[in-house]
Amino acid sequence: MASQDAADEQQTAPDPIDDLVTTAHSVTVRRRKLDYTATTGRLVLRKEVVTDGKFDGHLPKAEVFVTAYTLDGADPAQRPVTFAFNGGPGSASIWLHLGVLGPRRVVSGDAGDLAAPPYGLVDNAETLLAHSDLVFIDPVSTGYSRAVKGEKPGDYHGFQADLESVGEVIRLWTTRNGRWVSPKFLAGESYGTTRAAGLAQHLQSRHGMYLNGLMLISAVLDFSTLVFSEGNDLPYTLFLPTYAAIAHYHGLHGDRPLAEVLAEAEEFAARDYPHALSQGSRLSTQDRSAVVAKLARLTGLSEDYVDRVDLRVEHIRFFTELLRHRRQTVGRLDGRFTGWEADYGGERLTEDPTTTAIMGAYTAGINHYLHTELAYPNDLPYEVLSMQVNRDWSYKEFENAHVTVAHKLAAAMRGNPHLKIHVASGYTDGATPYFATEHTLAQLRIPTELRDNIEVAYYPAGHMMYVHEPSRIQQAKDLAAFVKKAANR
Image 1 (cartoon, rainbow, N blue to C red):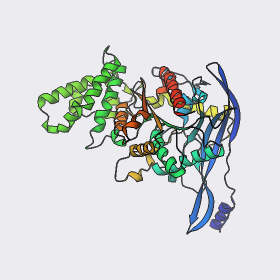
Image 2: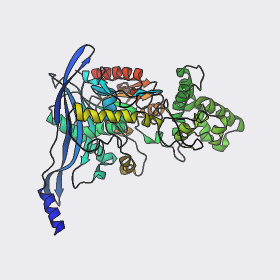
Image 3: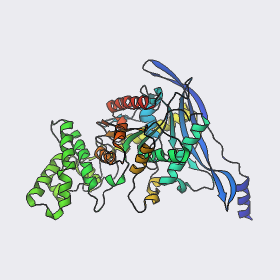
Image 4: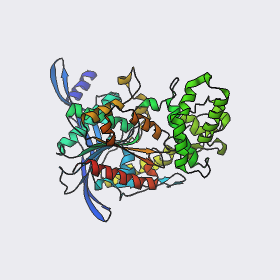
């Protein structure tokens, strides 16, 4: 009887509905006052369900949280719109939202000069809103996004399901807001670049939606360049210039200019280093000693350490070892940040100093902002970064191959020769190293004439390069210039 009552309740329960809240705001950009509308809340995603050949209806499956900013009085046909998201997998869009793109930004401080709680928000005079409307999307189980009652959250925690759900949000928002003929962009960070590259092809093939451009911030398009595994020496070489940049930041290259250090590291990583690793036991004692010495000098590690790890410096070990003599670790997301450990005899740091340094400011900022300034009422916890989602993420589509979306990006570019790509890389990013990104871009299977559609910008900071104030200001200029050029308006 109880189970029947539950079934009846399930059948009679009202469908979830959008709970969007709209507020009016303004921000001043270069002495120009921008009046804009913020719309925030959850969109109900529905799916056409067919069972045994019979149509069961357009049923609710998930509620996805978005925050959209639209410039008042603008012509929708002329006005670009940018859909933005972060990565993880399992991260909400908080970092791009309050770090560099949105009209308000967090004051978090920077490496060596962190802001103290309770933190604060200020107007972002460099917001991309001056050039494009903005829609920030939190994938299911991040932010306030959730599966609806009776549905499984895990159904959305995977490569293809994620593309389809985020793609549906983009299609739905575009349709409801009359923006099919607007210039359209995607901005993704970290795994968000994996998602963006996949979405470019998905939106073209599934919905016939052709984009103007992708903004790939701290890109990861081919996971074989990042995953340290037995028999895969590629990451060891591609991480080397980043190791050198981090060592340079911490004073281990004396007064040599950064550009000079990187040029040497890149040349060695591209030629002599991979050759030495491929030789294995065939490498002569003299040649091995020379490689050990050069690796030690470039990375800032001791020759003894480089020799003991057989010329192969794994990244988490590097972050733990580099400043061991100072009893400090360095950040994975940004090697400029340093942290402390309870035990300095370990091989692997227990937490990323970058994350712990900025998490408090961004979490306080988004909770205050959404509830107080955007007036969105919701008692759920705002999931900034769900490690459960990250651990459970499914790559079943790549069961017999390594994870890559390079082929999808290439296919999207071949199908849409007007698609422009902006790539942003930080020199001290130990999560998605810039030299690995360069390697992947060079391998894209696109015609020579499409190579000019790709531009790359570099910054003397890490994964979230915008926490470094000079990099934030420059990046905002770079993104604005890209949108203006690629909008074709």
